[in-house]
Length: 248
Image (cartoon, rainbow, N blue to C red; front, side, top):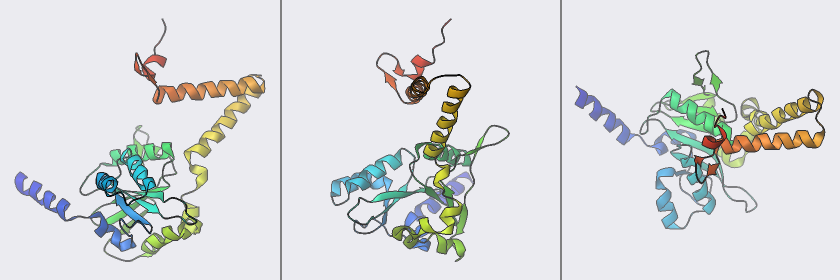
C-alpha cells in the first residue's frame, strides 16, 4: 500500500507542469522579446544560453532566496529592463505546508521584493498579496490567506482579472482589484517610515531630545537592528552573536 501511494504521488508530480496550470491565464514562457515566465531551476541554462537579459538572471537569483519555482517578468516600455512582478510556486512537485508559505510570505513582505505571488495546486491557483504582513494567531503561529482562488477547471471572474495581458499592459495595477488589495500603503517600507516618524516625534516631545540627537539615535538603532539580522563579524560570525551578549 505504501509503495502504491508513493508511486501514485510520483506520477502526479511528473505529469504536473507549471506551464499547464498557467495556461488558463494565458501566460507566455521564456520569450526574451515579451513579458514571460522563467523557471528558477533552469537558471544555469539561461546563463549558458547568453540570450536572456541580465535582469532576468539576477531576478531569478533573488527569487531563489525566496524558494520560488518561477518568476513572471514584465517587459517594460522605453527600453527599461524587464521587471520581476510575480513569484510562482509549484505546490505539487515541491509540496509545501501552510506553515512554510507563512514563513515565505513573511520574508517576501519584509524584503518588499514582489507585490504578489501565485501558488499552483493541481486544481487551482491561489493568489497572495505580497504587500500585506502575515497575521499572528492567538496561539502565536503565522497565518496568511489568499486574495483569490482561481479554479483550473472553469472560467470565472478571477480568470479575467488575472489574465497575463492585464500584467503585461500594466492595466492590472490601474484596476479595482489592485486598488482593493495590493496597496502600496501596506508595504513594509511605508510602514517602517510611518513607525519611524512616530518614534521620532516621541523622542522629541516626550523625551525632550533635540532634532539632531533624536535623528542620530534612530539611525544608530536601525544600524544595530540591521547588524543583528544581517551583519557579520570576522571573529564571531553573525553580528547577532556579538550584539546579543549580555553583560553581567
